[in-house]
Amino acid sequence: MIRVAAVGDIHMGPDTRGVLRPAFDTLPDCADLLLLAGDLTRHGTLDEARVVADEIRDLGVPVVAVLGNHDHHDDRQDEVSDLLRGAGAHVLEGESTVLRIGDARVGVAGTKGFGGGFVGASAGEFGEPVMKEFVRVSRRCADGLRTALERLAEEDCDVRIALTHYSPVPETLAGEPAEIYPFLGSYLLAEAIDTAGADLAVHGHAHAGSEHGMTTGGVKVRNVAQPVIGRAFHVYHLPLRERVGADARASAG
Image 1 (cartoon, one colour):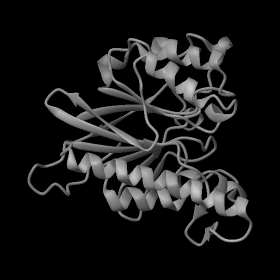
Image 2 (tube, rainbow, N blue to C red; image 1 turned 30 degrees about the horizontal axis):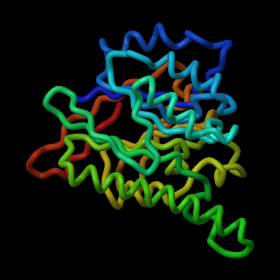
Image 3 (cartoon, helix red, strand yellow; image 1 turned 30 degrees about the vertical axis):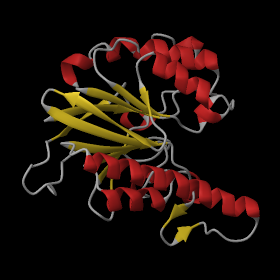
Image 4 (cartoon, rainbow, N blue to C red; image 1 turned 60 degrees about the vertical axis):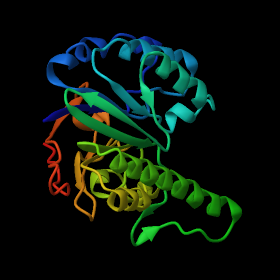
């Protein structure tokens, strides 16, 4: 069994320095890794990123993160990523990482993702150049996630997790105004997850959304935005894949 701690949308700044650290210090007792699902800062400034870096440094468990839209606001996302990597985090964008946890190989594929909406109410790659580029950005993020998940399949991981900021399904947006769903996620992310395969998908971004959802392919989706889970992190338990009949789906509480 792999214990996955996850949280997103912690929106840290200098005035919240140290707020999460006491809870994070308990992670080695209750979890095998920590996933950070974006919007780690408020405005993507380096001062805010340094606070996050200090919060996650030397936790005693691996940390894997993606950035969110807030982390891009100051247009210093590369430097924000470097600060987090300097604190030991794996920061992913269209990439994957494999963690050795005991005898298990845990693979995480990540992308920020982007908007565009969901089946029956989604944006199309048509019209003005800016609209076409909007959809293309979402498609590029989804393609990067699919490729990263496929790479994990080749690595023969015991558990595969998709980590995004934007949501892959509308179910975890329930509670948000329907009018803003196209800005909270994209069905292209779910298509990528179902095509490549995963045991769990984790995202943030939807502060007023719901925790539980599922892709049409049966992959469980969890919205771990801190306002949704109401705590420093939530822990999900994932059984290891069967070596024979590797289609076995992991369950998430």
